[in-house]
Image (cartoon, rainbow, N blue to C red):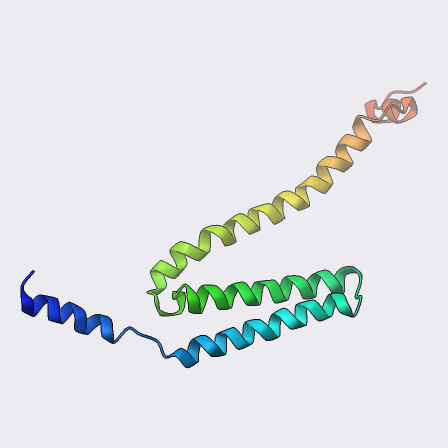
Length: 127
């Protein structure tokens, strides 16, 4: 590599530094979201509200970490899609499997139970 090419490479890397204020602001938001997540437990919330708040705070914190500290906010859109779409597709498929599992459990409970009256009714026979 020639000296001119080395200085061009060095100059292009200098423009990529992010201000420290960005990282401190992100850290502040992460601190606030962590405190809010802690407050969900401190307030002793229960049920769906508790778990939905915990998951929302978790996703927001993960999004901030990925966007700022892993520099995804500055990547090309194609690379962002290549990294984020496969896990999202896996989550969609897991949701579909979860919905299907209720049907499968209900079918097994109905058709594999030991109740002889239910077996006769299923087969359409008469006693």
